[in-house]
Length: 195
Image 1 (cartoon, rainbow, N blue to C red):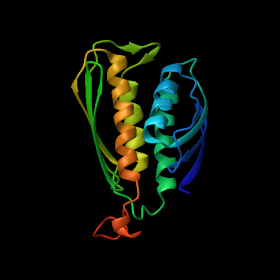
Image 2 (spheres, one colour):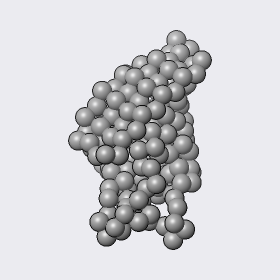
Image 3 (cartoon, rainbow, N blue to C red):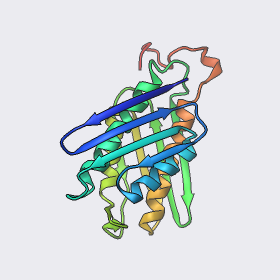
Image 4 (tube, rainbow, N blue to C red):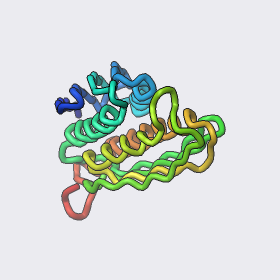
């Protein structure tokens, strides 16, 4: 089983996160931010990863530290669960519609953290969360996961729909990239011999 646990405690957040890449999409999520919790539940369901998250953050200030640190922790736990990355497909791409929104996510589990984020919103918040924090989440996630991550909005006006399409597309692209390719026979998918 490809599973891992991460505990991250700072003066701003206290996070416990468990991930099972070979799960069935079960989740127990309490991020302290209702909208982010909803997005992470969707992420688990669409990736088929089992996800358990409990975060206590300084949400009396705002959601910035909570959202960023959960992104960092999710990247760390994914990297740990993948181990040497033997036999994985490595690449994943999804174009996902959510009503009027259309989002492309393409990624490479390369060992090199990089984010290209091309998403725009008409408003500043969804619920009580600043939409700009989605980029902070993805930056922390891609860096600590060691993933080259491209996120491009192709269409959309409704901020909730756009963000939901981002998380669902990320989940499905990761599901593809982390899946085992029997043809690789347990080899690392790189001519370098390491990812």
